[in-house]
Image (cartoon, rainbow, N blue to C red; front, top):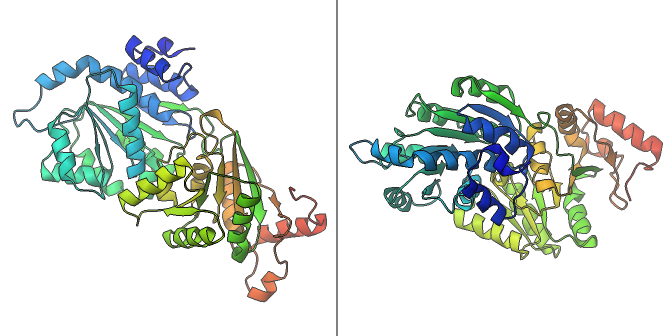
Length: 417
């Protein structure tokens, strides 16, 4: 099945072919015809499966058809108003989505604009004046523009929530409610996310009108092409293990996750001392510093990039193969997002998680979400200290006790060498 069979215009199909895209992904096959027919949708699919194109392509086609009539119906105040609004939780994801709109719509007379915080608002205001058909924005900065009067949403026809679950996790619900008050009731709304929890489903009921549900993969499942390995290791030896694995296997592009910004900075500094050039990316970094670190990672100047969950949203590195969880996330759904950074676009990926005694309960929660057990292994030379519980006085969880008993009984034979 080609893109032309989905109802896309020949110009868009030719543009996709010129960029090497011949066959639509499952989420694109399901979503594009529904959006073109005017339906609200709630779509879930793993990262790297083409969610952005699934909404960008039909929106571009529909906007290009009615651009003239929309311009003629603009308000007398002549305040810029987009025809389509895409809300994202992070600046990086906003940049990625905006780039996709510009790439797919390069042959169309449509203006796509960006609005996110951390940078001066004035250049964004000036860009809006030059024309704005599509706006990709973070919630906070969009509200800044609405308050400033630099744009209105009166002409909005299409609303997209990208990574809706992450927006809720990051506490954007109040901002979202404020934005909804500014929207016209007559609009087409799309909600896209890699995972759906109760809060996301609850939000969808307020946003969507008789939506079509699209679930390409079973909710909250890890991408099948990503191999998952769990190493049991003492916390103080995690950094040493990571540097050893990267160095001994000559890995050149590795994305590492921590739970906090402080851990990210410390780990990056210590790994650099080990001879592995590493940088950290998180919310405390300036936009310029984050963009520079990401560019150097993509180009190969930096061998490893340490990121927090918030900063990782929007990282689109198509050939990324290796992801390491230095610390397991408190939110088990974040594990799915993390390992989904590898194995994108059908490529193989490898996700390694380092688990200490104190994190056994977090692993159990992840396994419950995945619906499968992730057998723990020992890496030769980095076996955990089995007497550590006595030394530290920290009692192991029941699930951890069961796992440790199996490892003792097996004499480490279940280890991957």
